[in-house]
Amino acid sequence: MPTSTTSHTESLSFAEAFELINPHLYTVEERIRAQAKSFDPAVEGYIAYICGAGGKRLRPALALLSAGATGKITPSHVDLAVILELIHIATLVHDDIIDGADLRRDQPSANAKWGNSISVLLGDVLFAHALKLSTNFSNSDICRRIADAAAEVCSGEIIQTQRRFDLKLTTADYYRIIEMKTAALFTAACELGAFISEASPAIIGSLKTFGTKLGVAYQIYDDILDLAGNEEETGKTLGTDLQKGKFTLPVLLMLQSGKDVNALRDMLLQDGPTAPSALAAILQDAGTIENAKAIARRFIGEATAQLDGIQNNRYSRGLQSIPRHLLGLLNGL
Image 1: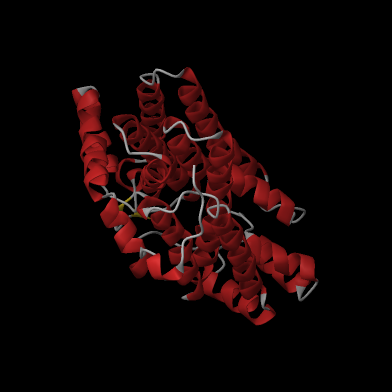
Image 2: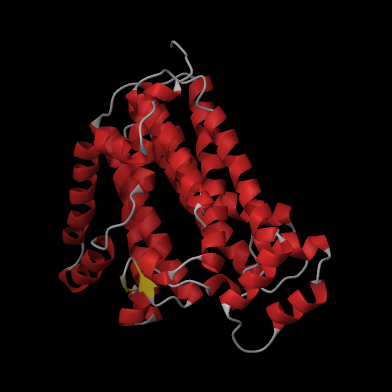
């Protein structure tokens, strides 16, 4: 496969990248919304609600762009995109229960609407449904890899929950957790998009690493957003990490720096809620939010570098637009 580095003049914007795959994304969206009809009528309405809430559809986009960058987009790639997004939706349902979040995508979360008991089961049944769909691939390795990614996501959430309010959590622990709980689906989308296209092992490996690095950077950005973002702009409940004892990168960097550690520990472990804005102000003054941004930028750069050996076409340039867009969001915080 020929290789080249995409020049700046040939670059696509984030919006142009999504426009490039829009017909396929439209099919993915229709199929996601249609999944509700696969369930018992008593369950159908719940599934329709959580699958109809929309979203960025970033994981499907990564799968489709990786497909186009290494061949052509086929029905199997669309199947992959649908399955990965269903798994992602299931994880969001469970995340909102764990975090006690009331808002998701500008509407009440499933747990706010129906309570935790139904919401846990909704996430479970959607996981099971997605894995059932994955058995339709003729190559069992694809099904196995999807199942591995789903297990990684859940395992990452378990480890994060185990380590709540743990002042001994290290940045290495944090990276391990987010590689599992967030980057696993990014990785699977890019890796399997190329695998289904029958790309070379080297290209599959590059896209796999791209997905992992991008997923880590994305989660660091999201964790900074939880401290410094605006609920009206994000459409989701913020400040839940702090309230639930999830110590994210800006907090860990300050704990390791030794700056005002005692005051920070008191704030993190105090009884009753701590305002995210109060913690954000301390972290901002200490410079650890900026340090976390710098680390995210490093991961973005490492992700982008993985695309240097990918064939130069519109889809590979579309892939390049995603870390570039994330960098813009990060710089805007």
